[in-house]
Length: 203
Image 1 (cartoon, rainbow, N blue to C red):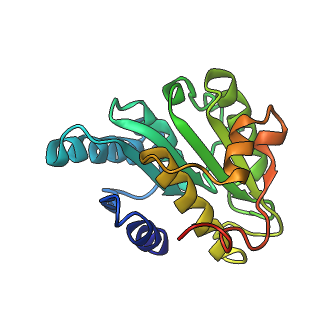
Image 2 (tube, rainbow, N blue to C red):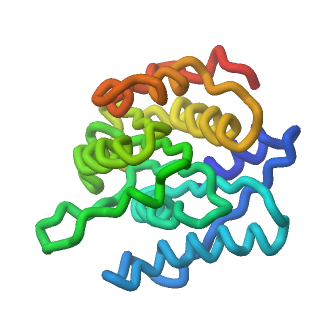
């Protein structure tokens, strides 16, 4: 997450964007305790305590992506960025991931199609359910990329910055993001991330 944090801090410097990284208290989701989600919720509350009534975007990768999505119900959170989110497949009798907390939020999910650690089809199914509760949900697929999203790292960071700055400030989303948010499923939930995304965008 450090490259993402640095990218966001640089891109949003003019608007006064502050980026904080959360150190989770434990490893793993820890069942019903969902400790990572609790930590993400604490982080949103800490932002309010420190800075007052400011818009908050939760961002996470892997299990952190699941935590960000789950903690989106905090009243200060207006947007969520989930990168290659790790989601349960239901084989252990897990309850489906909730989506009602995403209502009214701007939501972007990014997933590599060759991810062998976090099944991209599971994030699609979650996005499909979330879109029914919240039309401001979109999902981008990074073709041939894996869990770490390294193959198209520059494009992924540019997409993340475009979304976060558009969600938090008055910047207009790039055409691909705006199209993904406006397109009905499945198109808006299987939007391909084009090679070179961000090269022609504003700084």
